[in-house]
Length: 320
Image 1 (cartoon, rainbow, N blue to C red):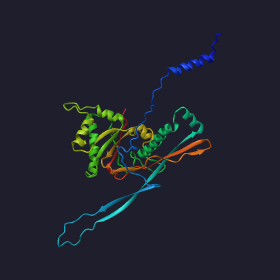
Image 2 (image 1 turned 180 degrees about the horizontal axis):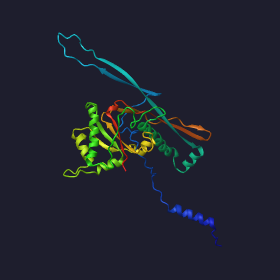
Image 3 (image 1 turned 30 degrees about the vertical axis):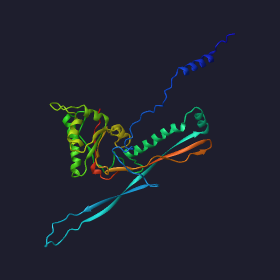
Image 4 (image 1 turned 45 degrees about the vertical axis):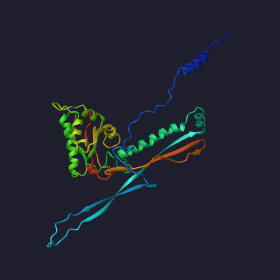
């Protein structure tokens, strides 16, 4: 006798057909996230590893005073030079995160052929590196740590330059004036290697061309005048998310509603600014009740800017 199908039979059959018709790709695709360039040591070198149990870093600064005078037999006084060493302290930050897996969850995942611990390591890595990146760029007001983009000792200019209404010549003059001012301020001992800008500003400079014979874009003109291939020190103009007005306000660099992007003129010499750090580490897993808990941690110093006059922050109208 033929059996009649009820509603549950029809639903089960539909689920079976859906599974049979489903093709699962052979890899897991990870969601794309913003670049953690500062944590990775781009434009800000990682100067070395932190010693175990370090809580504070001390930097020594040597200063000398004195200039020689021409000597003759009749000279009465020979000038004496002097030197002094001052110190500056920087904070060390430790960021931690944990994973927790029940024994039952681990058994079920093992049966299904999936390693949930390895999958969670992707989340652990991102969580730790993202936190290191944030404190490296913007510091931590609660700890009194300063960041690469908001150090109080770096000269900051509120510029009248407006990229929304500027001409090709205005754009070129804005960059040239600041690059030249930094070099003059340091008597040519420090110079600019990178310009950190918002993505919209870089696009604007790359698509604004000089009228007339040359037809160069702003980017081409800047690199022609200041680029490393032409006797200068400028290596490139790079788009960085953190130069945007919304992120500067979100992380407390600017008050809410300021609507100012920030152009950051970054130094050529690697000893101008740095941070110390180490690789993520973990504690041995602990079984608490029915759960395995593993703690991971990542250490970094705050950003240490030893020669702040080699850099400059320039706040400009938010490009729309």
